[in-house]
Structures are given as structure tokens and as C-alpha cells.
Length: 342
Ligand code: SF4
Image (cartoon, rainbow, N blue to C red; front, side, top):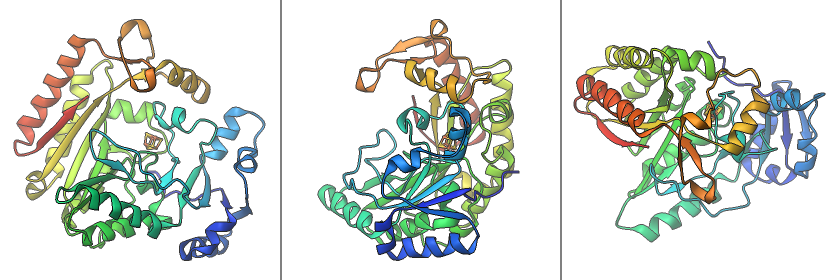
């Protein structure tokens, strides 16, 4: 069982102490006896303890920076939402295929932003622009926010903020089961709480440092009982020997544990495994022993964002994935909505 995250090292940006949440977190970590350092520049943080890249990367992944979000323009976040809402960047998990390894580059530490009110104000502006349509905000584009939220409660505030809006919707996805503090948040049904799930072989081999499938399902049951709309992202769907059975077991387990009422308003998203050449290089550096298959010649090349091609499964494999998983979902969760396969 993965314990709730506790940082090994905390950095505080001086401006963060001008915000109530910044002060609160500073006091909290002081009381917890965690080493706290001031920082005015990222260069200082980049210079983390460790003799080599491997060690430094691991220290960074358990370092928390309390900072102020300066860029208040939100990125778009298709296909699951209109905008990405930035509360945290980075993650303490060690999933071998994590996209953050490439997007965060040499800044793999976790950064939590304390100017939440300013972030909410910007979200309100975006919502006004699209009225009377709803605007969906995705809170987990640059992190697994649930993994750190038991310490910061930023997500809880966001859930309650969107709970009071008429046109806003919040969504996020997690591989962590530490959800207890979110159960009494006044969500008013405006947050869709999603769990990322995968079969036993994949979680065991490629997702160290995250909650196991049983724990995630147990947390999903609590979340459903707390009245949240629930969803699952099956990602990344990865072909390995026995994958059909593996995913079948996963879906059956899910169906047997979820209460009937939770199966009525349920969404599924399916994302096949993909990688880029730069991602492959970083994965081999960060997780040199990984069993992850990253063979370009076995895959189909697909034009990607920013002109960087990605390697996805061949068309016939994609069809098999879609047919197999859609079959499981239709059979076990006939009322669920299948949002997309990509
Ligand atoms: Fe990346 Fe998600 Fe794993 Fe964290 S839990 S390392 S964000 S894939």
C-alpha cells in the first residue's frame, strides 16, 4: 500500500508567503519537521542533492515547492475539457510512461501554487466568455493533483468553488487512493472524479509509487458514495501477453465492487499507449531497467502536436483494443458513457 505523500524537502518562494495558503503550508511543514529552504530562483532547486541524474531525479520527485502561479493564461485541454486549470505541476509517482518526464524536462519537482483565488478569478473570466455554454476545466494536465492534495487542500477548494458556479465543471484524474478529505466537499455534482486504471501486470511493472488497483477501486466506491459523478480512464492501454484476460479481470473486479447506483452516471475514456522519440530517450534515462516496449518498428507513426510524431499501435491492434474494451464496458456497464478512444 502506498502511503500518502510526504515531501523529503520543501522550498518556499518568498512571494508565496504573501498568501494565506503559503503561510499555512509553511507552518504545517515546519511542524512536521521537514527541511524547508527559501528559494528565489529555479536554478537553486535544480541543484538538488544527489551524485548523479538517477539520484537527483528521485530527490526531485519528492521535493515540494510552494510557489505562486505567474502565467495565468490557461492552456486548452482537448478532448476531455476546454481548459487546463493550473494548481500543481509535477508528481511523486514513478510511472515509467509518464508524459511529465518530457513536459517537465529538468524540473521534475512538484510545485503547488498558493494564489488559488487569482486562479479562480481567471476561471470565472473563461466561463463568462463561453456563457451560456458550460466550461469544463481539467485539473490534472500537469500533475496528479490528488496525490498531493491531502497536504494542500487546493483541490478541495476548487471543488467547492466550482460547486457554487452555474456554468463551470471540474474534472481530474488520479492514480492515488488518498481521497478521504475530499469526501465531504460541497461538490454539488459539478466535479467528475476520475480514476486512472490499468490491469494488474501494467500497474505492477510500470506504475511504482502509485496506489494499487484494489485501492483505487476502493477509493472510487467512497467517491461514488459521496455523490460525485464518477469516471474511469483506462490508460495507457498497453499490449502485453495476456492483455485481454488482464483487462477482463480488471473490468470484472470493477463491476463487482461498484455499487449499482454508481454505474448509472459513469464515463469511460480509453487511451492507447504511445510514445515519441524524445520521450523514449527520457524514459531510458530515468528508468533504465524498464520492461516497457518502445520499439518504433512495431508501431504506427502518427503526426503529433508540435510536429513531433508519435508511435501508436498498428490499425488492426487499435481495432482489437477498441473491440475488446468496448465489449467489456457494454457488457458490464450498459449505462456508462464511452467518451472517446484515442
Ligand atoms: Fe505521471 Fe500520473 Fe504516474 Fe504521476 S501518477 S507519475 S502524473 S502517470
